[in-house]
Image (cartoon, rainbow, N blue to C red; front, side):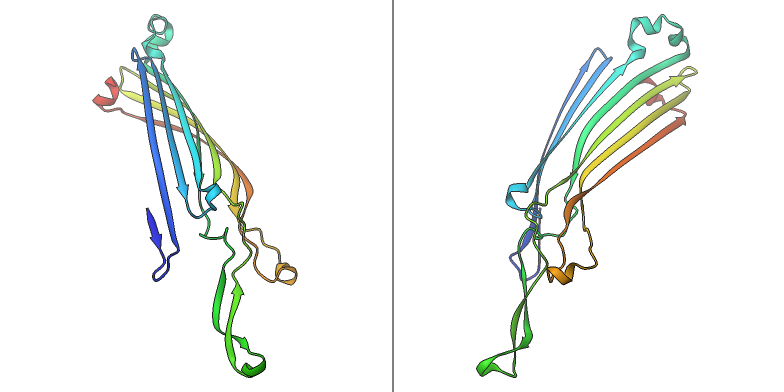
Length: 212
């Protein structure tokens, strides 16, 4: 995928490769592996690519014989435990910040010598470059529990999510930056963020959901 400025050869290009593998044994043990291999020209060539895998496991406890013969089997018609762990990334930054770019101003200032007193073209630095900027990354975890009770007439789903982000792309401002460098600072991989969420959902499952 590419997007280019009109009249310019400067294009932003993205490319992705995606793969998935599933495993299921005896309707009890489930596993899935998904990966993304993404590239973005918003970064320098050595930082184009990011690899983002995700793995998940599931156990349908209600299919176990010991479960069916226990007190739990009399209460729960269906019970599945889920866990997933994955890595995602974002290129949330303006393009070409890794290149030193100059803006041409046709009336940049007064000339010297034979051009004295006339406005001449000039180049203005478009901020400082940061060639080291790269994908920010988030490690995502999810633990879930799916249950059906009352002869599959009631479905209960609980989920807990925890995200841990590092190398968050952000602009770190400094009120005195024009004084000692003469131009704005670039975006950097600086921030960190943790987030969590828990959910409980209760509903009446459809017939298809009840037998799946």
